Length: 121
Image 1 (tube, rainbow, N blue to C red):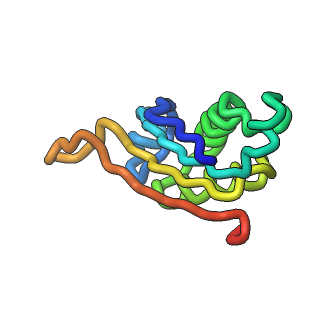
Image 2: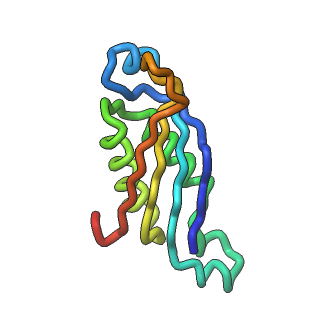
């Protein structure tokens, strides 16, 4: 089964520029979480499922606890932490968008995608 969480917004301090590190900025996060949901489907019990509220809270906490210069490093850390913290998860995919970039061309966002399975950690 796959759970998707789309367009979660987090204010955090990541980026190469000193202003990004000090002032912070808005980020949007999409997650794809794959796990064997047969026990949850049979029991209708949250204890057998992946609690997506807990996952969203974990992502917010991860993003606000440590600062990264590169989106690649931040995305990799989030995926690894989710796989370690939620043992039911088999695969985690993330799309991480930095909104309101300090670029002259003024794109809507820059996005990075990353995924990893439990066997890769």
